[in-house]
Length: 222
Image (cartoon, rainbow, N blue to C red; front, side, top):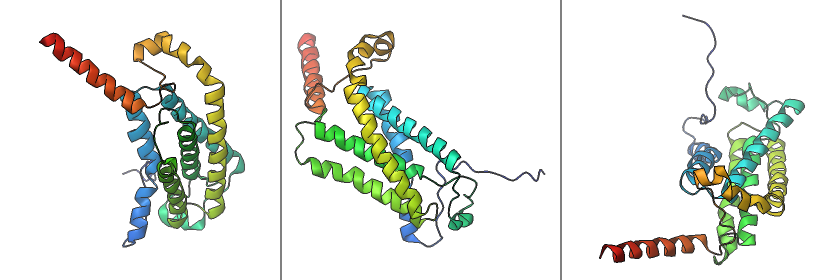
């Protein structure tokens, strides 16, 4: 048998101390970026294909790419506690998890405050409390579980905050001007890509149009 050491796929591998119930919960919290990417944005593209959501996801990818470049240049190791987790073969500053979640939280908040597709929702503070609480919990989980130091997650959070805000400005002030062109392009027509940022309440609009289409079909059937 070969003596070549084995390496795990760490995308969904999060370790915690056996018997630590808090650590068990925080290990799941640490996977929130994976759930958002696969369960959220991938599902969004398959079923909705809305341009703001697609550029939201693109911004997160760019943010993570920037994170990797910074880590390569800074070359700051993870804390000594990660030796128990078999995770010391990767760099630690800044934390990509914290950067991802704070990018997500600030972009989502700005979308809500601008009322893009959500302008009729009251108590925006309650809606925005959820992503920010997840962002803080994710940041805390990375320190608690021993994957990062506090300065590493703090740096990731700050970087994610400013990248999220900056990318939102780029999308709403520059890229959104090309949304109609993207809709009418061969790509847009082939994949049914759409822009709904001009609709005050997307859920209500789609609900009412779906009901109207069904009633129209029933009337024709009669």
